Length: 307
Image 1 (cartoon, rainbow, N blue to C red):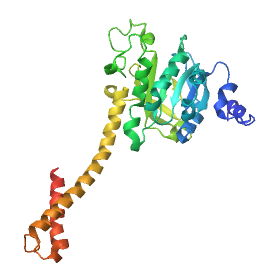
Image 2: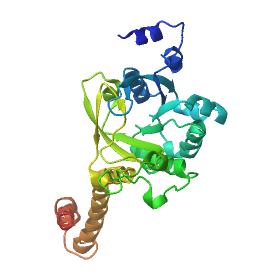
Image 3: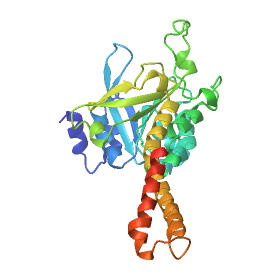
Image 4: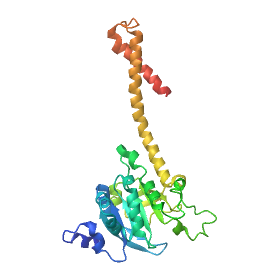
């Protein structure tokens, strides 16, 4: 256990949400929003993490400020700005990000106003399968809101575009940071034990907006190894497309079940009407279960094979 962690644990009832008050001045501030199981695990792992300062310029410890996402979004706007001021990373581990995207983006922009410091957003939230249609676009909504008031901000069609390091003009572009001041990351394929750093290392699949190809977050977490998604699907839209297709693979089984039940009812109704002696056929009623329903099941099976 590090001395930093000991100082935290021996304070008089001080919650780790006040962790930034006991950090060295040269630490990089990281704000974590979300106090659920995943949020707590992420805060635990982030306390032992480092932030890379440029290429080959060394690493600096993380100064973690951990707040409940619901509590944070319920603060006055000025208080939100104060909490975010000086933060190099804002890590979201809550839910319903699309509902908070506009307000959170406004607070982030206000906290960075008049400074040249960078502020990046990392979205760890995974949409709840029940409310996925509402949670799916959170990172895209936030990135769009961050760029709304920026000069030369890209349109909706270009949201989440990845800068191409292989472009001819890449080496001559010295204003990339000015043109792309906001970096929004979406991390998937990780669980609470992975971010807590308690079970070896795990690959975290990274999607990004406002970033260059092969770029990954500068946070070095002990339990995660960043890996960019395939280039053709490495932006935020690619992540949404991937999640929608994964959901579609699950939905098709539900659809097949519902349609199978509906087709079985239809074929059973037709078989009884066609062959029952009480309707239009010669089969006695005691044959409905063993003979007529058997026809219904066979017809349903043939339909499912064709479809």
